[in-house]
Image (spheres, rainbow, N blue to C red):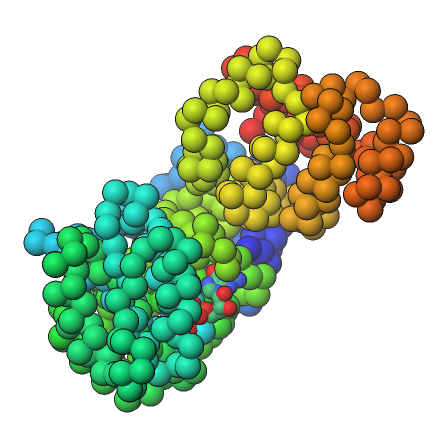
Length: 445
Ligand code: GDP
């Protein structure tokens, strides 16, 4: 994720504290210096770094430490709380209008991920029981309207756009007209996608202001690409002055460049981060929780988000059915395939595993897990006959050879899959019985 190297640096710093029984003021100074360097190297804005390190230092030196913790744990706990604070403290959700439709306007540079986000937001709101409509007000970028139509089609949310062939179109008029459309068609949320430029310019700001004034949004969300490094501060300030915004959405948090923008934006603009976008797929989207993100950065795991994503992907019914299968030992390779497909729905495997505590310590294994693995597994299972899928014990050497040939893999791959299947069977059975599975090298989750 975007905080990969920062995570590594901070956990390394804490590791070196572990052996100490007591921390002297000079140990604390050294630690704070390392934290400071790690943050600056991740492109966190200088003023944010300064206030952060000052707070950590004062608290670590002061009496405000939890005596039940050992010195290293005390520092980790202070850093976690301060990280949570710079990410927005308790955070907040979307503000809805008392008189629908609620208007959410998206603003940001071209390529920040606004159009993609519009689709993700529509999908999220729909799942929450809303009836959103997407509005195409990016009439500048060629293809932007089509892109929104495609995204709208994927999430099955209508798109309000100028008639094709009606000329260039006036985004302010489109935005205004969309409100009438929403009221007529009973859409309770209007999501307005606006034009961005590759750099900040006054025309673009003026257009965004005009749209804002025409539809008086309940939320103006500034969409910020977390990968743009130090430019993030300048861009956030420019949008703050230019259109003013009520909240922030961070995109591309899945990238592995430095994600300092995420850590600076609240401090610089005093606006909360509401959502995070973590990939190109429409499911790669999360409500932003400062406390959970702080834990993830410190490699303390974000089990809550993982559980929520799993719950989203596995509906109640299929979960109960699976549990029954595990308990009665009738879990077959077809079910295994089914499960893999459910996992695919949860987003990329890497980002999921990255949310487990201690996951960064498993970096090497993580790098070896890729979504292609799933495709290969699917191919292998599909090359088996229905009888073999139900009764894997039939898979003798010659059948395995045939399956390997059929799916274009080696016999070793088939053998590995069968070993994993057996392991999954065992692990799931433990879970279904209410036990805690062991993940190799990590202890109970
Ligand atoms: P817009 O110009 O602001 O509307 O940006 P788009 O929504 O067209 O996104 C620009 C590019 O970034 C597209 O290729 C998207 O697929 C990609 N993108 C958007 N959000 C994410 C994200 O969270 N992670 C990654 N890796 N790519 C993203």
